[in-house]
Image (cartoon, rainbow, N blue to C red; front, top):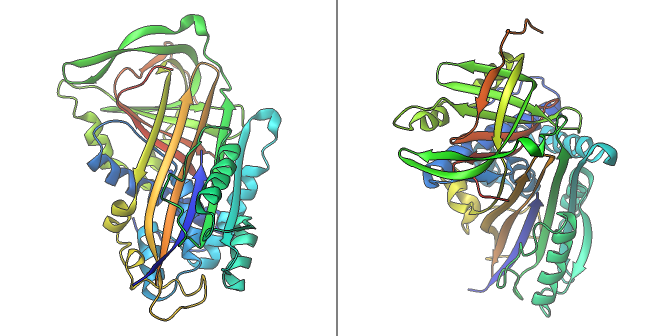
Length: 407
C-alpha cells in the first residue's frame, strides 16, 4: 500500500476544564496552560535533565491540525490537548496571535507567523483553508514536493530560519520531505526582550550550582537587589521577573533544597493550573536579593509518544479521520505520522531570547508592607521556570533547569 506524506511544521522560538462563559481568548489560554503542565509531567517522567519547550507553539500548531479532524479523532485530540469547543478555540488562538503580534518593536520582539505550503497538485478543502487563514494567518505557498522534495525542504527551512532570527536552521531534516509529501503548515514564534531591571555584569560571579546530591558544577550567577513580586511557603519560593515588554515576565519556582534533593520532584507533583493560580495570587511586592544563572539551552523532542500517552491515539493510525482537511481518497486516509518539537533559549544580564520549532507530519495511506530586610532567592540548584503573558496568563515557554550550560 502506498503512503503519501502530508507534513505540517509549526515553528516557535508551553485537568478537565470547565470553560463556562469565559471569552475565547481566555479559553484558548487555559487550554494552552493545561496542556503545558500535562506535557511537562510526561517529559519530566522521561527526561532526567533540562526541559524546555513552547506549549503555546505545540497547542496552536495542533489546533490548526484539529480543524481538519472529524469524528472520534476530533474528540480524542480535544481531550488530550484540553481544547474547548472549536469556535472558541480558533477565535481565541486568533486573538492571542493578534495580541502578541501587536507589541511595538521599541519594547521588544514577540512575533508569530504562519504559512501553508502545498504541493502544486494538492488542494485542501476550501473551508479548511479559509479557517486556518482567518484564525492562524496562514498564507498559501505552492511547492513541487513530488519532483523537488529536497529543494522544497531547504526553502521551508530558510523561512523557518528567517522567522526565528537564525535560531532554528534545520527544522526539517533530510528525509522529512519526500516525493510523497503533500502539505507543510508552518507556525513560528520568536521572543526577545530586555529585563525591566537589568543585572549589572560586574555583579555576576562564578559560583557552584548543585545539580543533585553530592554533585555540582560551576556556573555564572547573576545578581541584583530589586523589588519583585515574590511568594513563598514551606519548601518553595517563587519570583516574577518582568521584561520591558509590558505584562510579560519570567516566573521562577525554586524548591528549598533538602539533603536528599527531592524537593523538585515534590514540586513537579504539585504543578497544576489551579496551583499556579493560587501561588500567583499570594505574591507580594518584596525586596529580593536575586541570584539567577546565565544559561543557554536547546532541546528537541519527539512528541508522538507523549501525545499518545495523553490519549491522542487515533490520529496516529490509519483509522484517523482528517476528512475536513482534504478530499477523502478511498483506502487512503490521512493520519499523523510524527510530531517533533525543538526549542531554544538564551538568558543573560540584559535580556532573554527564545525560539523553537514543532513539526507535525501527516501521512496519507495510499500592595503590601515591606519587610526590613530583603529575602534571598538564590537559584543555585534545580528550578522550574515559565515565560508568560501576565494579562492572559498564557505560558509561552516552560522549562526545568537542572544543569545550566555556559553562554
